[in-house]
Length: 309
Image: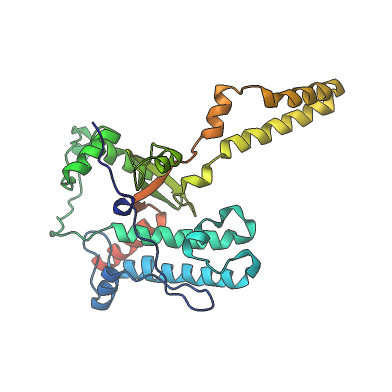
């Protein structure tokens, strides 16, 4: 089965749009659905109360924007280019001086992506009836109501995960595995090198597989950040081991120098080749984000209890 060819613009969300001033500051992105709910004091049917939306999106989002602008103002201007934007800020994790900028920008990016993904319940929610102990002895059912209706999407899910049920179980289990702040992502994975695609007649990457990826705290979906990390980590460990050997035996040092002088003319192992090319030219494009941070559950529970009192 050949998965559908997806144009990068179809699957990938649009870039974050922020209102910017001359002082390079950002403001909270406009979410029309949430703005309407706030103006009408209405709930996000099936998921959040109006108060929960106010806390999770408006208050937290504004706090992230405020923190981001504050750290941008305090950062040495030499570290930031004139074309500074939110995507550059989320990619600044490799610079310690830009840590707080990266953290707040990424959290803001993830927050917006999450709220752009969810939709209100179109039908009236069913009354939740507490289950008795007899439910523990029943055989679990593998049927649920919100099955995707797009045939191509269903085929793609079945090609990547085996079945919709497997995707559902994987999302749930991945979410349960996150003990702190984090996000479960459904991503499209390009299985072809961008170097190959650039030499072909394709105008955009081909995404053949879907995958589930977890990010934690201020993590973001950007596979290029991992490129070469395994190789560099192994190189560091090898250097440490080499230093220990040099301290123990001077002759080992001379032998190691000789090996290094001839290593340029030798072929590496399969393991070295794999570490060298791991995640090389590979793209992950986020399609769905589910924020599973504990704050969401706590805020939902608090406002649900208050509404029932």
